[in-house]
Amino acid sequence: PGNVNPGGVLASGLGPPANANMHPTVRIEPVRAVPDSHMLRILAEDVAAHRFSIPIDRMVRLEDAGEAQAAAAKGGIGKIISSSCPYD
Figure 1 (cartoon, rainbow, N blue to C red):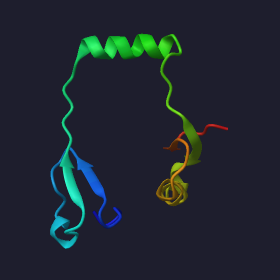
Figure 2: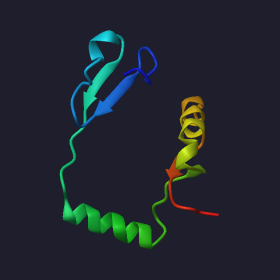
Figure 3: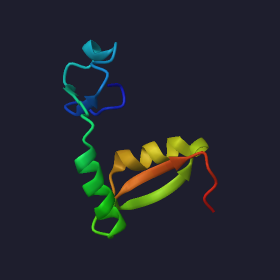
């Protein structure tokens, strides 16, 4: 939780991190994904029909992940994609 603001929430599929007790104001919420082929098909159809989109605020190179983290902490209008693949 070191990167979560005091009073914030950390969602984890792995359980609480080892240092969770050092951050008593951070709430740990378990996340569990259950595969569902029917819902995946619906989602794929929605994506193909352009009924579903995820707003992308910016793309940064993996080596600039610190920049992406800082931008995400400030908030914005969309997701930030960090990739090791060239995209320009």
